[in-house]
Length: 262
Image 1 (spheres, rainbow, N blue to C red):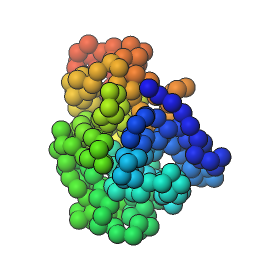
Image 2 (image 1 turned 45 degrees about the horizontal axis):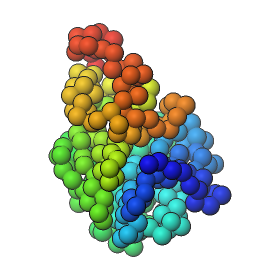
Image 3 (image 1 turned 180 degrees about the vertical axis):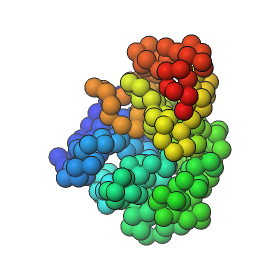
Image 4 (image 1 turned 45 degrees about the vertical axis):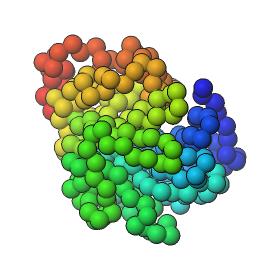
């Protein structure tokens, strides 16, 4: 069952889930980094996922204002135990965004008591891209393969490798009791999908990710995208499959004709 709540007037973000699951959806430029014009323009989502019983939480794609993200966690009685990175782009993990410096994971790790206790979970294929963009070292990263499971207290998060937007793009399947959440980064939005014409992009791989790798995600799973590119911040996978035009292509050839082959 979904519900919403507020954690103080300064952070009117949305919280989901019941029981021990802690799950918050924060919109950059509104719920944090409110004075950052790039954050307001890029409308990234950051997700906080944790176990209320143990107080552990991970942050998905914490860019723009790491100190505010840590403040939100602390205000909720949670502590950061890890970072999940969907892909290497600076608006998700920090770095140079077309000449604009975005603070991200590197800055976040500098603000925690023990950096080594906060691993950054990435897909193996994304390791060289992440280190090049963020300034993180290989030792900061915990590389995964598709199907690997990350435990946050009692909460299970499954890594799903979905190349296409970047070589190591990944989604996260959050098993929330009887519910299933898909945190999709820039692989899939409620309307459209991630670009494939940026460095490391691959249109053929994106088609395979959408039609094969994500095909096993049931229709009643709730999709939480990497950007606020639609009127609603989330939707079921069934609704997304019915309404999103990317699912109307019935063959790789038709897809590649529309997306220019790369």
